[in-house]
Image (cartoon, rainbow, N blue to C red):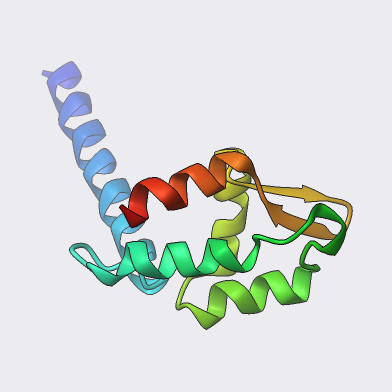
Length: 106
């Protein structure tokens, strides 16, 4: 009986966690079914399509995200995915990012 209760509690905690993640996404402007989201992501990434030496500094990168209605904190996940790269205070699009834009634009 106790083990069954623990499983039910664990399932409820997982659901709350998912709900909180969904709420955070909504607050960041990532609305489910938002057909405009991909277009905004593409526009944001294209702002980083500059030569490495001319990469965006932190403030410009933040403005790029905010200007397209995206949370600047999303930058880290784009770096982790290999779509954007940061070297010192320069941020720029990678070849993988260009490929993503091409796929999503087609």
